[in-house]
Image (tube, rainbow, N blue to C red; front, side, top):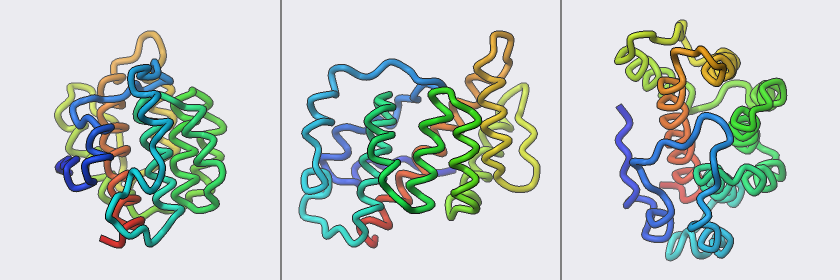
Length: 186
């Protein structure tokens, strides 16, 4: 399983990332106490002493951080200006959380296949296996099926909101880690 080590991202990013928090499956409530810190967080502040080798991936990290703290509009503003498959991935997650499921699927179509999908599939399988009502994940990561699962999880009589939230949490960390590594060539 993916091990979350916020210290590897440096002090500035570790400060705004709490590995224990599982963000809401839906829009959630913005973390008001973090707004000033997030607003002041520039690429230079987020990556001090680290050479940024891919600015788009560094921007993806910022989009993800806003999303982590339930600031969907701010995350959206950043991700919609990143014309890469990874920018589309963050954009799709944001719309899935709104919830605007058809728009999320539009952005996941733009993602196509992504390098985190294989790791995410294995994480989702491990997480799902611990629940009494596991998700039918098939033999590969299917972002469209997960959008449907999240839509179902947000319905009144769902048996899987916690499971979907845990998988979405793993997805967030795997994607953030990928972006950080690409942004810094680590």
